[in-house]
Length: 204
Image 1 (spheres, rainbow, N blue to C red):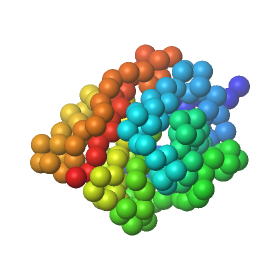
Image 2 (spheres, rainbow, N blue to C red; image 1 turned 45 degrees about the vertical axis):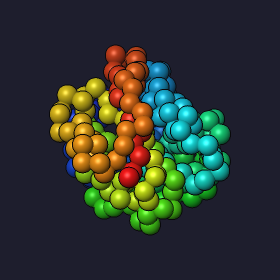
Image 3 (cartoon, rainbow, N blue to C red; image 1 turned 120 degrees about the vertical axis):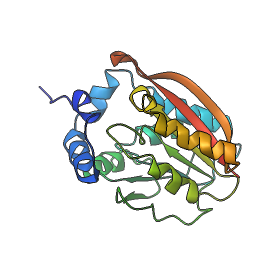
Image 4 (cartoon, rainbow, N blue to C red; image 1 turned 120 degrees about the horizontal axis):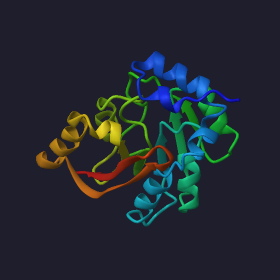
């Protein structure tokens, strides 16, 4: 019987611990979250599809994991998708799906090696929050976008319990650094009763 990780992942901290648990989880990840109805990749892909007319423009799936976000984006018509993740084992699962133009390992504590304007949009599906990347990664991703670029991401209910995450986003909106294009609470992992906010913000 495969080891279960959902009960553990929201308590990890730090880059090394996060990388290790996702490496260990890579082979059984899709089965475990699939049986719990993982909804966020489809929700983020649909939100972006409603805002982007040219789906041939390159898009970055940051924290792509095994490629479920890439699959959801493909199903919405996006044709040029790159992926980055800190887990080599997760990336091998993504590579086998043949969804991505390029795949790269990213250091969890360093900005992604992306020049502003390379991508018209960046998706971070289930990447920021408890058991995952710190909120500072959002600022790094926003810096990778040229004005007018879209950043799509999610905060699950565990993350929303910590007001510091939403405060960062609300601070950008108040200052005019970004404009909110979409925000909606809905299912994340309904099998364990967990929801998430999906956001799309536009860099100004």
